[in-house]
Image (cartoon, rainbow, N blue to C red; front, side, top):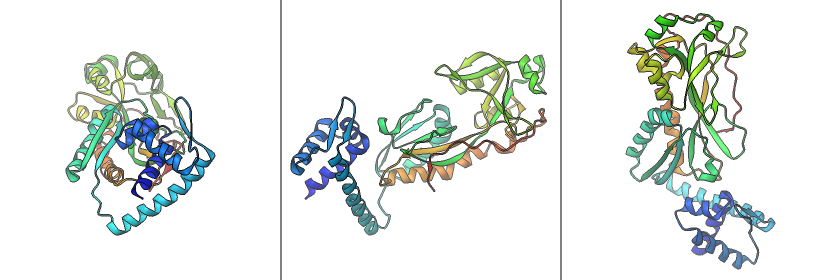
Length: 331
């Protein structure tokens, strides 16, 4: 009976991962071990469960029927275990997380480190990268995303907060080149822009009618690292469009001056996302709960200063931010 249950669990993991290799990576076993388990299951049932291609293992018609029945059976077993344990199971095992480089380092890593102290059996594998990882294909348990989320049924999301932006520059730069007071003034300034994979992020603000407008500024310096942009702005290389959590200390130390506050610029929602699954492991659940509880507090340190710069040099009224498309929202 135990072998049958093990075979069912591995079969379901392969069906959801779409490949023996990815399922093996998630389970911490070899690809050949997964293949043997599925082969024994197919031999016992007398049917083919997967049609194999070069990169994917797709369910056959019989496999789809068996998969749906296995899901119901496993869900019943998991519900029975949780009922007996009363939610006292200690989160354990490896938790794979994908986060943006600097936001992850400053705002996510401290939360996860505290989580590790709370749950000693938890192992963390965190990747810092500004590219958008494919959670299902690459085997991540969850990821943090900044900006508009694509429509997909494979992921679930919860909002962590809002990344507010500010346009700033070194006081010496502003003394030499002047302070932009109107939209057309930006055309006479130098900008330092974030560029990644050949794409440059536009600087966006809310016009008087609530419409989103791109700031027209010449950017001689393109960088793919927010810290490098901050350092260049402090050195007087030009105006920079940066997250408020990034420049909070530079503003308070007066190494940078705020030209336009976050109440006038388009903000980006921040979400934690994870693959849709029949059962959310306790290690993933506690991580999501910790991020939802703590990240807004980290972001909140900016608001008192960045939302109300002194003086406010731009008079463009703030309108409602456009709402991004959402994934399936949880909680």
